[in-house]
Image 1 (spheres, one colour):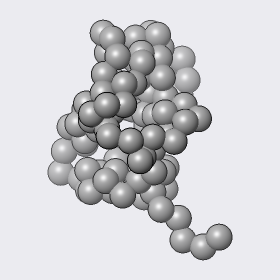
Image 2 (cartoon, helix red, strand yellow; image 1 turned 30 degrees about the vertical axis):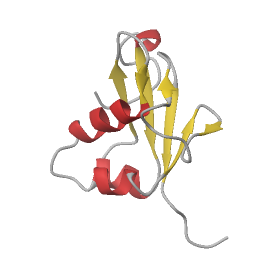
Image 3 (spheres, one colour; image 1 turned 45 degrees about the vertical axis):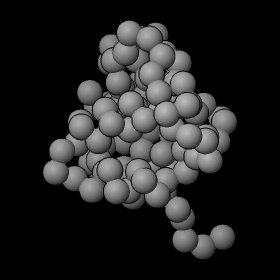
Length: 100
């Protein structure tokens, strides 16, 4: 489900909000998605669901090079199978940026 504006999607307590930045936003064609969930899921599952929402795009390849934040916590260096994403959380995918 595409993220249009805060408060316009499903009950925010039953979703994980995904934000795409720069090249990830371009690849997805949207600024973000709300992923409906029944409970916590792994970061691997967040990635799988995000890519599945945008078939035929380069989103999977772009997300593979992104830095990832769970809320304000960097999780890129952690095993995505071991990162548990709680319901109501926000995941940010930040592609590498050129320059300083």
